[in-house]
Image (cartoon, rainbow, N blue to C red; front, side, top):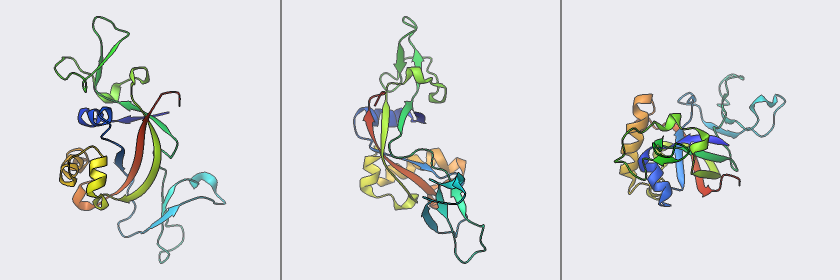
Length: 182
């Protein structure tokens, strides 16, 4: 089981069953002009099996770019969200997505696995350029429109070097809520 971070708005979208997709930038990005080759399914060197691969047959051999995906179909992810321990019942956890008016929230990055209440099963995975997101995909991401998704993407990723206008490669996952033990 692996953690995945979501902000409060996206956590609410999960809780409301409006979010069934999520995207994350591919890190590191492949060279700009190198085409996507596919998923490496076999090799004499097993260290890259399961990786995404970019390759240009016109470049010298050994110039392939490999990236290991952060998760795969069948993985269960536990959601890290903004949280805090209940002051009156320290064994109980509170979540900003339920009541933003409470003070003393802790960042999602520091949420322990024991506090997780949402678990997601990865049911599909693909690699694409971020600008290929459709209106339907943006709605499945939990937004009202593609324009709203673009604004949110840039608010998170532009300052990290992955602005929408640069059309970075991204991992696009289809997810569904599941139980922790499944």
